[in-house]
Image 1 (cartoon, one colour):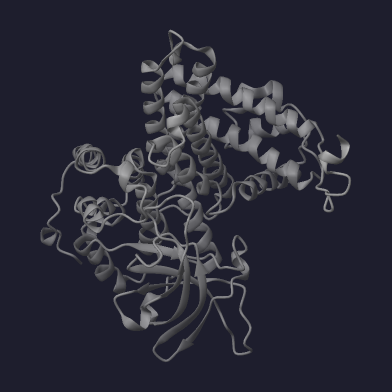
Image 2 (spheres, one colour):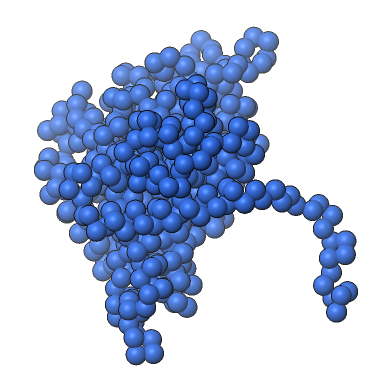
Length: 505
């Protein structure tokens, strides 16, 4: 094991560390450098990123016996939040490393390989990522075509992966692949291996770098995989590889609020400051009722995200198996990313013309937060899965009324009574897919409001909880109205026939 005395990092109380980390980031982003200017270019200057990594933020996701801070979820989320207050891209870089490499590697990696890998993170500022998504198989991971074959010296892995954050920049990758059997067929289960880019036979070739719409600090692209790794670089699932993947993805989704926390708080702080100081027609923006409504929406998002962080800190450590936490993990990921995008849109609107600039925090926030609603499972898909899971449980319990079921469901029992008036309806027997999305949005909000109730009981600001309850009730009523509208519109394929307006003038 690594002798912690060899690590130059000073072991200190985490509160001291995180406060120091926040101050240093604030100085780097706002005083020593102009991040609004840096954000217009792709990638981060090597020296700039190196100064950030000098503080060893990723040590929070490394076990204590290897010189890290012990993988406490609260600390991991605090680092993500501190980073996202200054840069959502930087927070995502940390999030990729923590949730998609370090945590699964610490849980499932071979002990014989862990010491050298963790040492590289602590001493050489290494980074790691996860490769699952393929050009022809996005969310359909079970049909991925990347395969591996076992040989005398380990495993040969071949395939294509794309849209991996840190493409061409990560030192280590967790690569998902399916075994090719003797008949040349790919088996159903999925296995994971880690690669080390420092070794020639394990280097992954970057075929193309993508011009992503936002998140300029993070490189994305198309990767060609043709590598050989020893047996010690295969992850060791507790049962199946599929369960390992679900455990990893659910844990990652549960920790999304860490990235959302600082991001939403920064938008709230910037918007409040602007509205207090901006005067229009003799009135401060803050005094306008419509503006107060918009600001309170961001405060509700801040409250919900705070509750999610508290919840995730309790349930998503690597000691806990979260492979079965699809309902709460999907609810958290989908709702927090919707709230991030909505908060960014509000902040841009309040900022006016200046907000519509890529070198303005609001404009940058809109394009940077948008992909969060897509990657690691598009929100529509996740909401659908939430609704399908609850529908299955309701059928098993022979219950058709949503309110009655949610009052007895562990994830919603405390929150459902707050919205009894609008939740008292029968769950459709065979809902359309579009209705499942809406039902998932409804259920996810009740699940996440329960997290707010629990946080309130612990002493969280009651005024913010009251604001959140009002907005949550309004959202639920709007969604139920959408559900009961029975909108069955489908697109007209040959829409141009009799549809040229000038012909009718």
